[in-house]
Length: 501
Image (tube, rainbow, N blue to C red; front, side):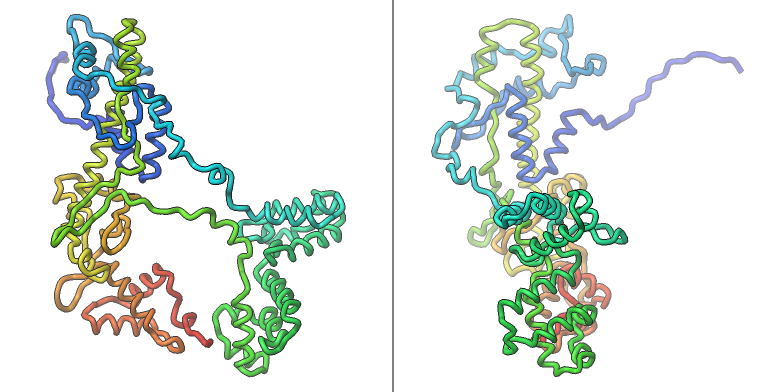
């Protein structure tokens, strides 16, 4: 058997992830806020892009520009700089017909920096200067007003700097009292550091600087005694302190009768003490960590017009892009090859961005239309009539891949007659019913929430009882599934839902 060299041809299909395809996939899964940030970043980096004036309609991209931007570049002509070189002997293969483009699309009045400079849309002075006060700032202000000695103020700053978001003094388990380490760092005696800590613990909000939950609640109990003057009409102070110091585990489990037996006091006194304790704040710093509210802006609206539903994309707030008129005129006045290559490269990037944005919007529209078709009963009657739906159903309906539908529905929101929901909300597993169509898992969760909201306050339903009530409605579901859904809804077990007052 001899050795020989042969040439053979083989035809095969491969998927090449071009930079343009990667960009389109990336844009597809961005949220609305991330999309706005991406557009603003591209406006800063690409001089060929500019923002359309407010109220202007989208411009169609010229066919020759689209052809030049979408034509693939041979692999051997793709160096690290992504520069596209001219191919000799094939005129116009990689070049754009600038003369025809400039003649066909007349110049438009330029917009400085691509933006509307009207002062009416600029935020007011106070809107740019105000912000919420943080917990360290609030405590440091009180520390400075306390007229402490320099060494005391120094250790006080260290204490405040070592508080977590909930207001607790941070320390590692097993390392002992953290105030000793802070005293060494501030070069003061431990008793000085402890005295400063106690002052900070009585700043507003009371309880900051506590080392654990018990210390935090006891600090607030002391403040309550001083404020109430020991008035027994509200609650017996001794019962409040003994409950906290001796029976925290029973308090957490809401076993109030056991606390009454252990303290040898009537149950009414324990309930009065518990009512006071539940008014305390277990996380005194949480009011300073919420930040500004984050409002959801829907990506798409669904309106009911007569008996039909109409899908409308929300383009408000998203910058509309076009090719810069300034560089269009610069090309007419200059003939430098280096400048032309640079502008052509930036133009290709700009065209692909605009096309990717348009494709993203069209895909969101098609997916929402398909969801509306499947979930018509939900739109008419509410969450309890949500139908089971999986990604494959929508993908087959619109002729796309499941992964594309998954990307489109991530962090996208729709405004419907039933409220604002994430597009992922409409995809649910199926729960069997003894009669009729299957029910979506979200619809079962809504029924569980309805059952719990209507239960007796002094005798809440157990998970098994909820299973029985759902079975009466024709819904077959296991008790462990009810427990999983209940926990997902943030509903406590029946033993902790019982209310005594």
